[in-house]
Figure 1 (spheres, rainbow, N blue to C red):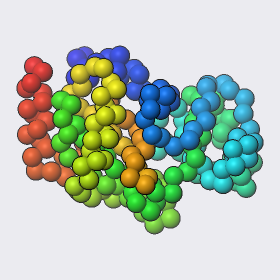
Figure 2 (figure 1 turned 60 degrees about the horizontal axis):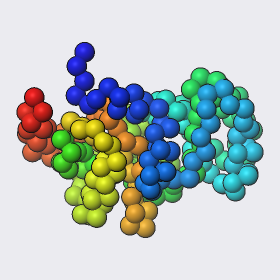
Figure 3 (figure 1 turned 135 degrees about the horizontal axis):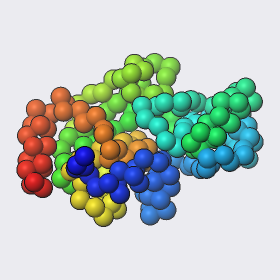
Figure 4 (figure 1 turned 180 degrees about the vertical axis):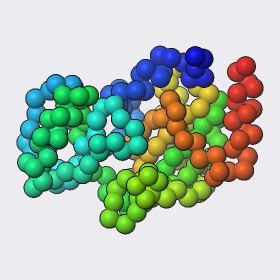
Length: 209
């Protein structure tokens, strides 16, 4: 099977530990605790040691908010079994909750052939934090401020390989873009959000064929 994005990029992007590598290179991102597969950890202790009143638990390998939930010091004890199962299967990340996800939404920036194409702003339904349409979230076609596009572009510059497509999912916090996910494998590209997006994508394909 031929891959449009290089195989080594796909393998790297499979495990969310790539976010830690990008943060070490200077990319802004939420505070996160990384726990490898089969790690021994108490979820309540993780939160209390860092003073987090709310956090998000995610598997290191997942998509579409699979087995992702909000936790608090009060609820963590009841969630320990689910947390232990997660650690035994793939490892986990515990991320300080970013309120802006609910109040401002999450951006998705689409790039074709390394060039910015279009963006959407995704917002969760009332009372939820998941922006995916599967959970009631909505995506709106919005023209983002130029500084945010530039910040997203600089994130992609850290990937040395040539990419046919990329989606940068991030939240704006005080004018800075905080990376949530970098989708390089099979992202939904919101083609409906811009009538010129399909042509840009076709041009990008033609340029590397």
